[in-house]
Image 1: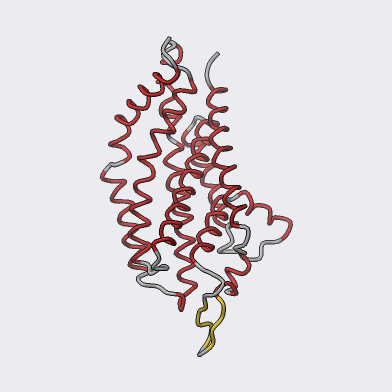
Image 2: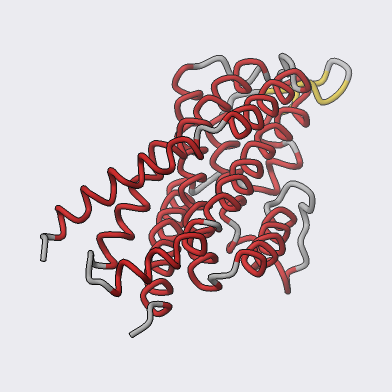
Length: 270
């Protein structure tokens, strides 16, 4: 029996070779690049004078890079289940080495396209022209991608049936979309807890928090300046305690992936 590390390296190399063409397929690249350029043109050189438009762009970032990686990740384990059962039955490797190789191999391939997307749309969209703010925005989006991917892996591993998993993911993301704080700013108290389950809500808050500061103003009327943080959509959202939001996303990131591993182990024949 080979060591865990040797199994991990072999599986990682195989996974990178097999999924490289899928992740960088012409269709997927065209899909992401066309949406990024179209978004940049729609929000072309927006500024704080049109703060509603800028806030909408940041919300679009959080939603698009929640949906896209989640639905891609759903297919991972159901598609590979027959191969996994066959190879595990012959004792080729441990489940943990397969799982960590599978998730580690996805990282470089799944983070390149959102990086290109944000780089194009951020500067075309006229967001704050600060390298630090841009890098923070990019890191938040990549963080969001990893969390969304973890949820997709968990749903795929739990249900092991693509149609059921995509249906559940659609409902889940719709709830996250509505509860994020952009469409509905005053959620009834008895259902307000839903937003705390939404990783899109935390991503959106973080994006707003790094984009605007307390000493920024926008034109809220003819010759009238108002604080950006007093803009209704931002004031209701609240951008304090951003460190807590980062920690909650970290719990989700680890929790979803742990759930995916447990579900994968329970689905294996004994």
